[in-house]
Image 1 (tube, rainbow, N blue to C red):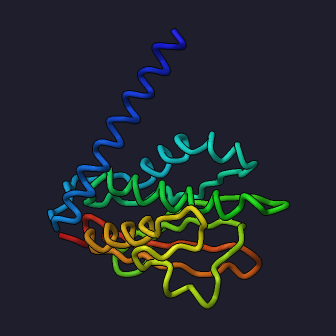
Image 2 (image 1 turned 90 degrees about the horizontal axis):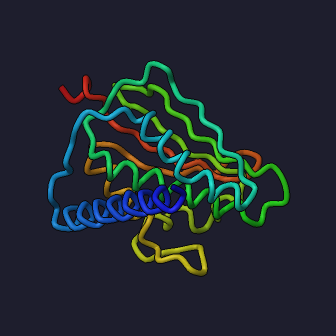
Length: 188
């Protein structure tokens, strides 16, 4: 039974990886995202479940503060999963060397002009001030093993959905990555 469950999880992970690769190919071919009505809070919850094991490995607690009345957005679900996974994993990695209070917080709320605002905050090392403008450039990385593609691809995905992705330093410690997506009503 356990082996069957593990095999099913592996098949699901391989399918998700295949979807991500095909969507990346579309993105670089400038193909249109495969959009449907998506509940972003549901996608956030899926990513929290998926990454909870990784977070617990580094003693990171994941908190969510999701707006109960968040409207749906017209989006490519797989691409949104990819953006959220990248931002959440970056946050977890940023806290690996933190001595205390390792917390990742994901929020969703209605912003201005019919935009849904999603934020991913960590209590890690924060953004290097002199490199804050460069972190979204392709091949630029602050991590020794980083490719410098995650944030660049994430920004391209969000912009292809009519949104915006940016980062800010937290007042005490850590960083927050924010992105907006137009709601389905605003797009109409």
